[in-house]
Image (cartoon, rainbow, N blue to C red; front, side, top):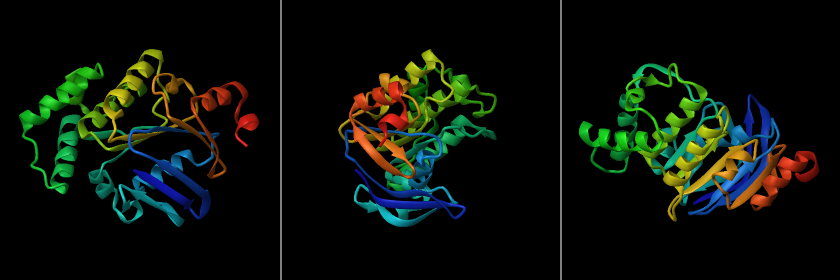
Length: 247
């Protein structure tokens, strides 16, 4: 589904990714772990198409298409979802407005009919209920006044409504307490586990992987993947640290 080959990327002319290669097949969950400054968030932003992140070498294909040639909204319509470490607040725009327009924009791009207000609200209510979020919160401006845990839960509701093929989740566990971590983990499993979907989890810690068990764990260090393994690799990193395990 996603194939990254020898990816190099810079931010403000500073090299961050330095030859990263990774393949994620449909039906798989991959976890990326690594120390601060290794390039984990840069990888997510490059895949999402954020401006200011320049690819200088390498290629990325998604479902056989050249991902790097697509604009961010085209990547989203193709089925890519990027979850942020720090979800942004958007004053003046309600969650319901934002999500209905996002979903219908993607449906139009795929040649599908837009959903009516009633059809959309039925989907939104089901996803909010599954994540334990009051529908009243979806009427509020996007993430405004939300706690860290509420923002992450809201992002899972967004992912459930959009129903992407591939989710890149950048430190979704950041700022979550134990209960919220379990809820978010259950949400990822419910929404993204399937033979036609895949997930790339970017995280510092093993704790999220207790709830979303990955098929593969990769260590990202100094802009490239230096080691790969199964879930046991995350446990070793937690116990011994990156210095002892990553090389």
